[in-house]
Image (cartoon, rainbow, N blue to C red; front, side, top):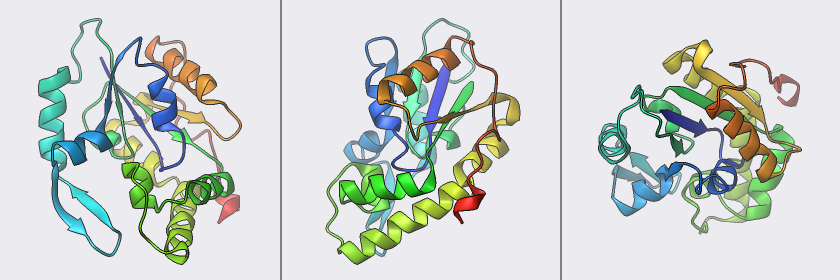
Amino acid sequence: MRVVVTGTPGTGKTSATALLEDEFAVAHLNDEVRDREFWTERDEERDSLVVDVDALESWVDEEYGEAGDDDSDVTLVESHLAHLLPADRVVVLRCRPDVLESRLLDRGESDARAAENVASTKSPRARTREARENRESEALDVILAEAVEEHGVDSVYEIETTDRSPAAVADAIRAVVAGEREPSAGTVDYLEYL
């Protein structure tokens, strides 16, 4: 079974899934994009890589098996792009936009670099603009909407991470994998932060 864990950069995907690596196979897609060069060009304005989603999907299928396999092996696929791949269940991590912006600014990373887990070379002004863009994206449910459009409302599980520790988020992901949570797309609302 393939469970993708997605969300705006800064919502806690990498921290939570790292805690589950002893239980499940975990693919951190941002690492693979860089290491295996699953990208087609560099977006100079954003200082980020344009991902070749088809190549990435083929690699995930080959390395971990295709989504829909009925075997008992569980693979967690983690990235802000993970919802673009086939999946059996989609976990969308959510974080209150003001907290998300603070997390990204505290890390001192741009949104693109935050997604790549690489220190940014951008100016503080550019990092502030990009953190604000991520804040707005989270308030508008951009990744959630894409996940629902791609996979359907019955396959999407929202997890609020604002006041949860990485261990608590990992527990919630574990509950999704075990079938102990109901799909919950649309339960988190941040429109007031626009």
